[in-house]
Length: 94
Image (spheres, rainbow, N blue to C red):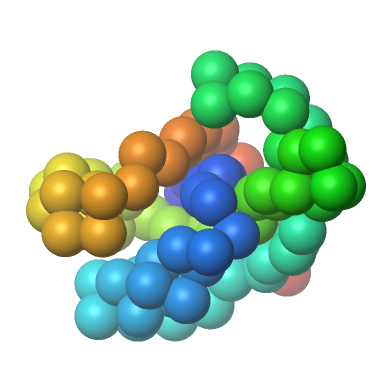
């Protein structure tokens, strides 16, 4: 199994949720209004740096991750968003 972490601009979160649903992702955990800094600059939710990100986590089989990855480029092209995705191996204990 793979833990998948997806970081996306907060304003594109709903579009990502629709994409995940249509891609067969049955569940995820979300951290809204995440602050930080990366290649897109500061995202602090402040007046000076008003943007924030959303971080979504889901656990999928390796096959499901491969299927999801096929649609990610289309999603990014359709909504004009670059997102970051990271995965790591996990053991589901329950």
